[in-house]
Amino acid sequence: MPGLDADTLQMVLSTLQKYADKKLPDSYLLELDHKDEFPRKVLKELYDPGKLGLHLVFIPEKFGGLGGGAYDIYRVSEIMAAMDLGIATGVLATFLGSDPITVGGTEEQQAHWMGRIADEGLLVAYGATEPQAGSDLAALKTRAEPVTEGDKIVGYKITGRKQWISNGGEATVYTVLALAPGGPTWFVVERGAEGFTQGKGEDKHGIRASNTAALFLEDVFVPVDRMIGGVEGQGLLQAQAVFGYTRLMVAAFGLGAGWAALKRAIRYSQQRIQAGAPLSQKQGYTHKLIVPNAARLEAARAYIEWTAARIDDGAGNLQTEGAVAKYMATEAGNKAAEDAIQALGGYGYAKEYMVEKIKRDVRITTIYEGTSEIMEWTISRDRSRRAGATRVGRDPRTRARRAAHPQPARALPARRVDRLGRDGRRVLRARGDQADDRD
Ligand SMILES: Cc1cc2nc3c(=O)[nH]c(=O)nc-3n(C[C@H](O)[C@H](O)[C@H](O)COP(=O)(O)OP(=O)(O)OC[C@H]3O[C@@H](n4cnc5c(N)ncnc54)[C@H](O)[C@@H]3O)c2cc1C
Image (cartoon, rainbow, N blue to C red; front, side, top):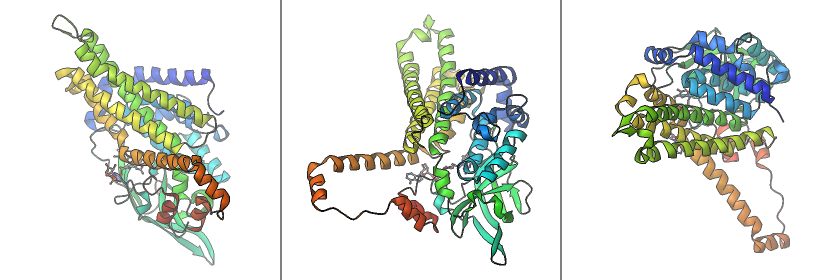
């Protein structure tokens, strides 16, 4: 079973908490929010292998990381979200950005890039979304044209635009999804490459301590060894291969931010006296604004932990379980933060009391890494398939009919994927996944 031993995990969590207590007081976080400022220094300290080295949790041991498993990533993500969801997003982006390499890279690519990210603490960005390709990534327009010498491909020229990219204006390394002749393919692009520019940071509703920017690519040349996996057309499958993990991470963001707001509401209710008694003694208050939220968040936690344990036990990527966890925990986190504002009355509506900021921050968790509607779609698709398969399998008449008239074996969907691999849309349709290819 992969993952940190209990002592190492405890050490990482307590170091992170101590750092937050010391360096990230409310006043500083409110200032970042107000100024819409990306805290470069904080990210640098979090990634500094000599200090916190937080990014090492996400990097496999063979590349110089600590090799955290899904459970460890959930625990770290929950604490980060409770600290500040904008800062947590900066860390998430590096993890997401390096995913295509960890999942699909050749051994040389993994050793080179993951080694550099571990040693140098590089900020990474994940460039999938485009102005016209959001939930439906297969609609991407960014192109990668082969550059040849004789009959040999020596590189690609990438042209297009990416939208809403976390760390977009700040990263050193970018993974960019582009349409090569063989289908959607990931490429590694470095900051400073000719023709590669970044837009200014977006002025956002929440997570204002994170940087979100558009990317512009104009005939950006990348040598062929920057094509992740060395084969065209694997991009969407590589993106899907990590959904279990990445959605669990955002689920933990919803959990961490939701509890951060709820804890503030609980503390407030114990101190605020109205009609001669603390609010915490009034059931009309606790049973409406506190208790249901605690129940929803803890139910979501149980599901996150169950999914994480299964992933760590080798049950596979668990895309649907990741979707259920994200859907439950992020919707619960949003509701808890919304109710926390109500629980603080007029004070909840003022920035100083933080719950207003948490509510704006946690809003993103039902949008990025696949919206709640896409999670619903994924869950519905996969559960209907499973229910259908079960009914047919159990129906004795069907079994008898099949025994009497055996059908020729059908090609597996994966084979169809290989055959249709020259076109990203058809790849997804073959797998019935067209709307579930989110970052
Ligand atoms: C702050 C921020 C950071 C981000 N960071 C990154 C990043 O680092 N890298 C990256 O690649 N992307 C990133 N994104 C993009 C994010 O993943 C997308 O915004 C998200 O997937 C939704 O895509 P969209 O905005 O194009 O909305 P659309 O896909 O246009 O959706 C609009 C609405 O329609 C609904 N909808 C869409 N399709 C369906 C359907 N089939 N059935 C039912 N409803 C549907 C959606 O749920 C949503 O409510 C970020 C976005 C934000 C705002």
